[in-house]
Image (cartoon, rainbow, N blue to C red):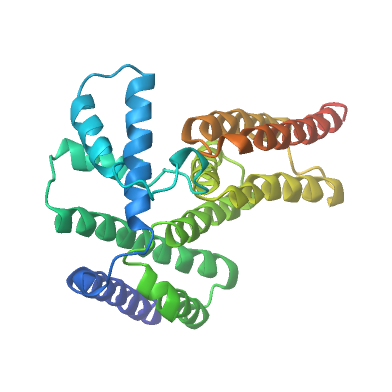
Length: 282
């Protein structure tokens, strides 16, 4: 009992110290080479959303900022930009909402936001390791390697593409672990949210929902006793519908990828339908 309390004290002390050090050293790290491109992408898609839903509130401010940024003709077209605006769009709205005009403050908000996301993913990463190994030393060592890998630690203060994708994958895997333990609506919804965010950040994030369905299918066909119930399959179908909705809502900004995404979802549906048919026939 005393050992567990001591381990908790060490764990809480480390994460609190890490957060404090990260906040106070935030300004010591530079600007990402593609950050101005991501800022442009955020305002572009924010303007697109406001025009699509015909929202007049803040629209003029967004349009003015977009016109100013887009004056740089060397910036790539956001419609064919290979990274989704899942981080850049909310940050752009936050800047407009607070009427932030200071350039340095704008970058600091972005850097602080991505650091906090990575910080939370480090906590979840520890939980994943503990869920798997249940050994405080192994989990602590693995978490330290996750945080303090030179490339990852430095980028965690400014890289809103790779670090964001890494963090959302960690969140998604955590809820996948919980789903393997017990299928619940809450875990399915949270898995769907983070899987959709991962897919929006990078298209390779499609491997997350596909892998979950495949592992559940393999678990079903290999088990002697049918552990998956009809209620479980209903939950999986609810996840499927929810995930499809999120995939369209969060979106993959490269419009050429929507056809491929649609085909993957059809395969996903056929696989789930075959599982459901086998269960209901028993």
